[in-house]
Image (cartoon, rainbow, N blue to C red; front, side, top):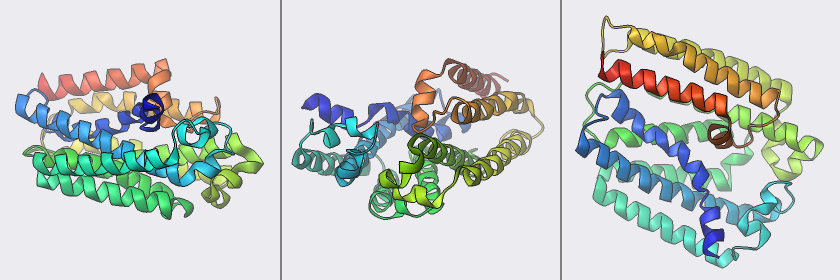
Length: 289
């Protein structure tokens, strides 16, 4: 049962919470011990609160998940984790994370609370509204980035990064919806009501718009970033971003995967190499040049 509970917490999706480190890295404080420890603690608490959201969401959706070709194997839907225990675990995890967040930083606690309430509203109502459902998911990523800024004293963090995170999250969200629609085909709306509001051609248009805008926005950030006027070395990282965006699109449209974006990050070796090279280039440019 403990194994089933851990699986319901979806530790593989904790990779999304790595966006809390954006403020630390892009503010030039990656190697400041106290700031790093605070960010690591915030990352851990965000993993707990996001796991509580996943458990609550699965508790609400267990009936429809039983009809899904993949989600039927989730512990709550399969019966491996009893529903009352799942609900209790969700409550305990959420209250514990919120209390610990308050003692870490009260501003961080407010951000965690905002994320928790937003995701609860998404799980109950907002995920059934086309377009708005993806916008809410994007807001969750932006809140992760903002949470990172509340844990340290920000000096050079650029607002451009909020724009980039919004666009990137929209890109991943629409790609996720496209993968779900392609997987479930005519039975899609029986598993996720919101898919009735989408078509693959429409999602392809959304993805084209958002992916192109993301590349342009990132390129502009590398040129105009306020923390390093006159130093345009970060423009050298643009090819890595372009490759990662194109690789994800290839996997969604050609390989027919992408319903769980974190699975691509954890399993696709070319995508991993692109991300690692981008991260290495960013660290070198920010801290060595």
